[in-house]
Length: 200
Image (tube, rainbow, N blue to C red; front, side, top):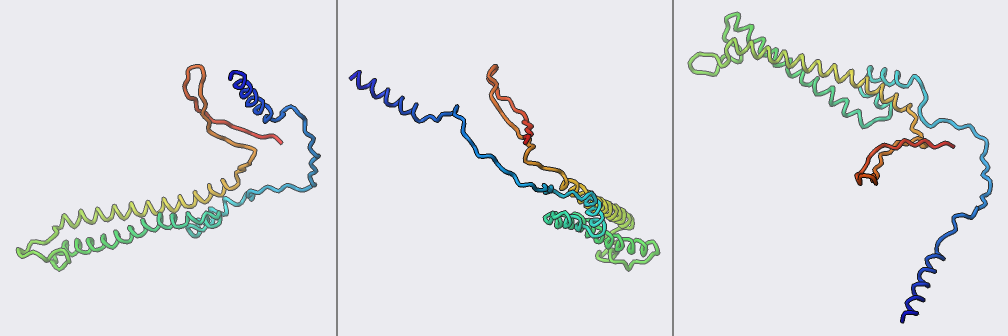
């Protein structure tokens, strides 16, 4: 029984040793012949590209993003500029309504749209309430204008920066990867960044 156990263990271990490959042997590879060719960079190297993208975005918002082939950003640009523009127009209409009513009250008339509606002859909105409403809509209108101008400028800056980043060389030979390993001294995990550059 004991002999058969030793024979079985020997056969199992021998088969594992036979399955290992020889790592010390030198393998002959045929020489690699590379044809003479001019290597052209695959990224955009036009130095005027950022200025052109910014110019296009200044002419028509979103055109610089289309020039950079970032088509998904165009709806964002139009929403960012369109919503404050819409709010500017609506607040301007409301400001004009309250301003016209306020001017007619100062003239002593009672025919504005905010006067009638109560049975006791007191206006629905007082003259002071009309003045406060004017200030509110004027402030909202000015803020909407500032946001629209800010998003318009941001559209131009984004097109310029995106065109600059398109020229950035993202090479396969350069990599930056996060890594994590176990510190064997105090048995705690260590994290870091690995910067690798492959030389040809």
